[in-house]
Image (cartoon, rainbow, N blue to C red; front, side, top):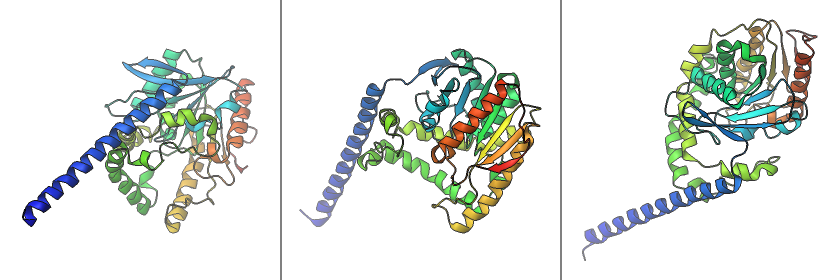
Amino acid sequence: MNSKKLLARLGTSIVLLCLLAGMGGAADNALSVRHYRSIAGVPGKLYDVGGYSMHLYCTGQGSPTVVLSSGLGDDFISWAKVQPVLSRQTRVCSYDRAGFGWSQSRHSVQDASAISSQLHQLLEAAGVQLPFVLVGHSISGIYLRSYAAHYPNDLAGLVFVDGATPLQDDRIPKALVKLQDQQRREMPWQKLLMTLGWYRLHGDCTSIPPGFEPYSTWIKADSCIPSQMAAIENELDAEHDSGEETIHAGPFGHLPVLILSRDPRVLPANWPAPVAKANAVVWNQMQEEAKDLSSQSIRIIAKGSDHYIQDDRPELVDREIASFISMIRNHQTFPENHSTSER
């Protein structure tokens, strides 16, 4: 056998081995997801919203109900450090947007208008009592503005947890926008690796963050699902349109608005320091401007917290939302309206 034929056979064998390994990894990932989902069941309930199932998880009793909306790529479990404690005060419902958690994927554009409409229909289907308090983390800050613009009579108040600002990419450092664009370009590759079981092989699909151990079954059942990467891409690709839809949303009259912001002195370790510092200044300014959304608003900076305040300072989130609920129940106003404080 000459060397050319030997190399050709060797190359074919390597390709076949790679294909077999990929098929095996994909099968293992799919079977693992099915296995963990069968163990976990459905936390809460599923409701039909326009022909698609959407997931809602409610605990506690009382009014007004608090509805929790997660950040990009997160499911309802992102509120696991907050919801149990807050449920002692009132009824609390967390949910999964289309394609995340236990909610069915949609191929239609997931911009702010679509997302707020789907949430409105979900809460109607579930019979959630009106008016309720809508809480949103990160990108959900844009979706909160859309909801308030479209369904003002549904709301008793808004709580922004380090919420995003419409068209913020026009204001944050250009170097950070480039980093985000690079991350977006890498997503199809990440989705392929997830599909082929690469992340599961490395244990990324079964690792449990500290403090989330009681929810390990749900976390394992909702990890390394490739279709959720597509849902992230869908919302990211619609982010500019979402910003255009909401840039002029508000002010919302006397609707109570609570703004919980990250500590601008806490810089993300995975960003270059100059970029992180420049972004902290702009982000802090945008958070301050959010007070203009209502004649009844205050802002609280969570000392020592990064972007995920509900993880870094859950006791602050629970305490301040509980106080916010009491204020609404008693028809009170903020004693220090339009103030900014650190706590």
